[in-house]
Length: 350
Image (cartoon, rainbow, N blue to C red; front, side, top):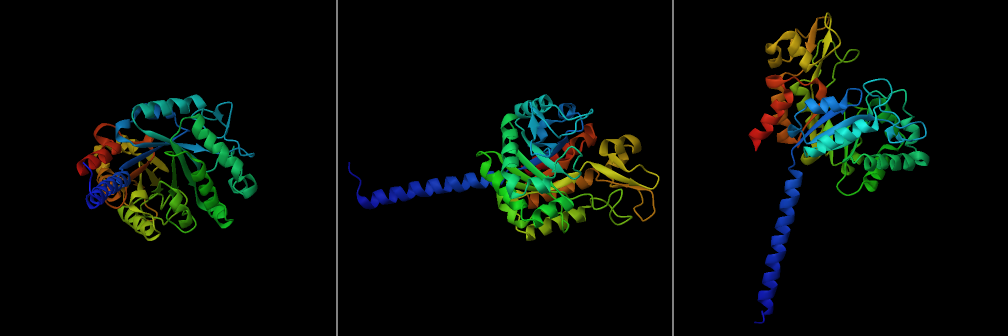
């Protein structure tokens, strides 16, 4: 039977509406992805850290940090040229392959994080290498690294004065654009950013990232910050989120960073993992953010305990797409695992 034109048009409209609704639903589902991103430093035993981590509670691992040589090379003979390992020298390519294999078996994506807060002596000059004359070669080398190691993307962690110098020279966003253009479909491009003037990735770069993690910690450290304050308060997390919302970072691209470590002052040593804090000061310490009293000239340790990590996870889910962790080797075990706390909050939301 022949369908009359009006009915045919009506049928086509229904099909179009159905397909459009499906596309919107898929886009919404993609945007609603919950992320738990864990950094695994190369200077730790990466394979051992991954082995002791419940990978079912992570969505992404960032192995960190890869840096280029003076001529822009990032790997030679299957090994990174500047990625300090747990022992002397650089991490081996075989270790990266091992981490990627284990993570992929658990359905976890693996990115390589480049640069870092402290650039190692083996690194070339990022500011020089990102100038137009040498940028394309570095980009090609990074893309080849992703391919050779079966990675899922690249995380850009250029920080502080180096970030400022590169951006002021007009070379940061073009670098990000070139990476985005060169990465195959499905590969990720992400960034970690601070929230202080001179330490923030430029707004012009935001459209090119799949998501951006906010390093909402280190407001005070061994040699910086306001004496007597905390290094990663909940109020700081709220302020950092508000700042990045005002800078146009969309909810589906915002990932809130949380620390699995603390800083000590006075009679205490300069740094502690959360696992160390629980081991030294007992289970009660896991429910606090401070050992001692936070005041100028006082002896205290500032960190995030279970309640604060729980509240920050809720914040990250409410205003963003999840949380990022620095770093996985610092986590506690059993009932004192902060990763488990994060996972519990995510499951509670489902």
